[in-house]
Length: 283
Ligand code: SF4
Image 1 (tube, helix red, strand yellow):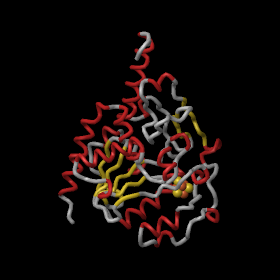
Image 2: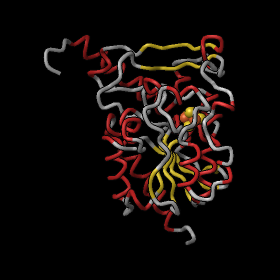
Image 3: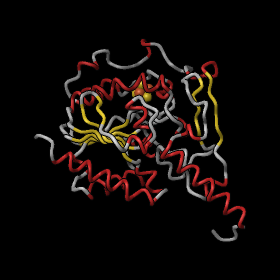
Image 4: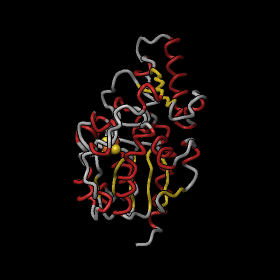
């Protein structure tokens, strides 16, 4: 970086290193008291990034790191449950859980106001792709581009996801792509547990309807949230899990790969492993 003095460069390198470590090994490395929902620790930049592609908000590129992320501690009293509305105001069809197709499910829940994110979203982001896919790709929650367009994994991260799929001879339309949350958390913060609790039944219903054989989970937060674990991404990548009776692999989020090209090689190994499992699936 031009005109950068040695001290600034050292600080930038150290901060980038720490954030990469946090991505691989978890926030607990630096935030030892992150233990309970009532003390949810959320890291967010004070301004939204221009490319604003979902997760991995714990790490940024060097230029952005000059502005140190602020850590917000949210106590239960301070609003963890603020904005959770009553069932009468959910604005969903009460028969949603009996939906026989994704189209019907979408139409029944797209007005959902079950948690506070319903009141801040621009668009409900249901999911897209092959409704009979053998592979479902799941991220954490919509980002700014997704919120704007109502479709998951668009923008730069979405384009990279398309390339990753193409590298193992899969097209975007061959798989089904969705998120755990259907509405964007403000400032791309991590989902709060009550939001996951409110929204996850919709994901389960989607999976029930699609009946996939394999799930590829993108990013540490998505993996931890879906699998209800505090395991690090390095640990999550090592195993095959199960969710709703479907095998689950976890790999890097494309947004993380955009910022950390060194992770493309291990990500490539992950998707090759996924492709091998995919090829061995029954029709
Ligand atoms: S995040 Fe999920 S539960 Fe919350 S309002 Fe959106 S659709 Fe409803």
